[in-house]
Amino acid sequence: MKKVLLFTLVLLLAAGMVFAGGSKEKGEGDAADGGKQFIVIKSSSIGGSWYACGAAFAKLISDNTKYVAMNSASPGLTNESIKAMMDGKAQLGLADAEAAYAAFKGKDPWTAPVAVNNLFTIWPGVFNVIVGADTNINTLADLKGKSIATYVEGEPSGIAFMDLLSWVGVTDKNSRVYRIMKNDATRMFIDGQADCLIYAFGHGHAKLKEITTARKVRFLPTDDANVKKFIEKYPFYTSEQFGSEFGVPDEQQFISPYFIACLDTLPADQAYEFTKVWWENWKFLEDALPSNVPYINRNNPKGDLPFPLHPGSEKYFKEKGIIK
Image (tube, rainbow, N blue to C red; front, side, top):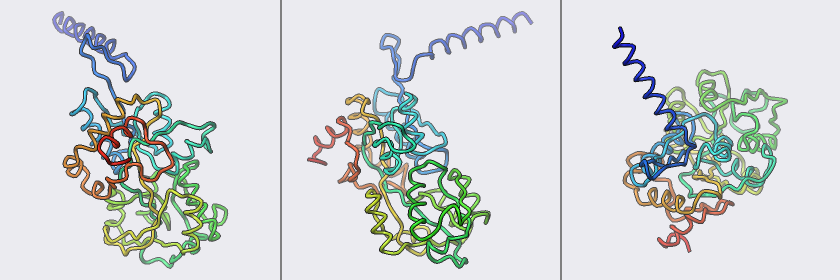
């Protein structure tokens, strides 16, 4: 018994030393004790393409630089990524243009501009408007009076799509709009509790595969006049055919590039190094993210987005002649 108690005490003391040694803020490291500097990438909850991207990027950074990178797989989309970076809980985050631009300009839900920088764009996000294949919903206007599962309150992308619906007479006053997280919205639609699902899925998305396997669906197109009006108001989008990749008839859907976001306070040498390891390991990325990487525009890392490229990544792209 005494030996057991003594062994337990030793373990507790050792654990105390570990926690004391690990009490440094993220990003700190002591060269004298061989400490590593930690980098956190805020992605999304487990299962989506953002989560897979964060995991792949973290491995690249950890295997090819002096930093140890961790993928923060937690709920929330762009807003949560930006909040995590502002709070010092992450150095990098995945983001969509619409929500990040609201932060960049200090628009609702932000009270002041946030210095969001673009490290580089990745693949495009496709904003899918999904209904059952056997329903009588054929246009956006037909959603009036129906149940719609979409973005949580305050997400700028959700606000944009409610804008679009309002132009054809569909509002949260004449329809049942459920503002819930993507996983819950997906399950609600699969279970037949929602007539329509509006969320960004896109190429290779696991949840979209789950939806199209569970039930037969269609994507709702929008008319040319509203496409033009939407893109004028939200210039991060284009309208392209999408669907056949998932065995669904192609329809016009709105598309906008995702990107790796950082704040302007990220050190230039880190931004350069993180960009380099991504841009020079395409074989690894193609193996890790086979459904997404083919859609990355390698000739346009800025993606025509209204955010400055971080000076560190810009330096890399100029050195390689990718941008002038």
